Image (cartoon, rainbow, N blue to C red; front, side, top):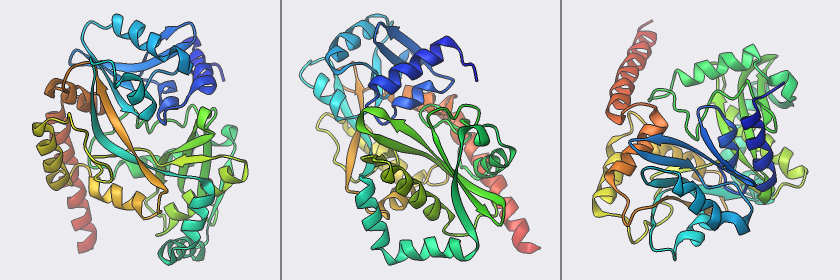
Length: 349
């Protein structure tokens, strides 16, 4: 399959220099890209702020020069959202950046995953529950999975259950037309596809990010646990050293940084407590925690301003939703009411 030159160049650089968990996400569409000779930065511009997808993809010894060159082209300020410890260390002594924890990601080695999973009676029960319902998981080739109508069907069923309108920045669900370098593990029940999970590479860490756990409407309980366990076992058997399920926004598993403003701490607490209709932060945190991660790594927003501003937070939210946050919440509320109405109708039948 032919891809456009910028996307191919991005892919080549990611496979050579990608370290940040989100590095492969900049190969997705809907991302603007800035290039230098040996570097690429994926970003979107919202509210006059360049919101970068993670961190620059470049050789480590070029990171400081890449930051300077990229930021020199921005009319407003820059925020590196989804940044990890390597970028934090590179910017912490520069004086011009604020660093705010906005979430955390769980991390495993494949060996520790297997030991933790097999040692947990509840996880074993869920895995066996799906197997007893004749669910089996196998890896599909890129050629087989690309734009497969059954995968598309379960993806649409899964997206229909989401509280917010479909998001794309760093959480792109529409990857079935470009599965190069990804791994696709499909759950089937007596020949019918009921779910799938995709993994994308984190090359310099010999690792993988579990991008999606897609569960169709007919998937038995335990399908996700069975799929993910199979997938981690598969990459572990090939020598992979690092697996993460990606960021949990507003996770309480790591502490806030000292320069997190009081108004932002209040806002994040309020969202955890009252935003469940739109995004179940605690539920996502619980789901990933139950797999007993080795550790939780903090995920940062590193912004080129003395203290992160409301404008920057608004730009980050707009990057994810593709619309003003208030409109996304309104649409999410309408979707939620429609979903609840459908559930009520089903109960009455």
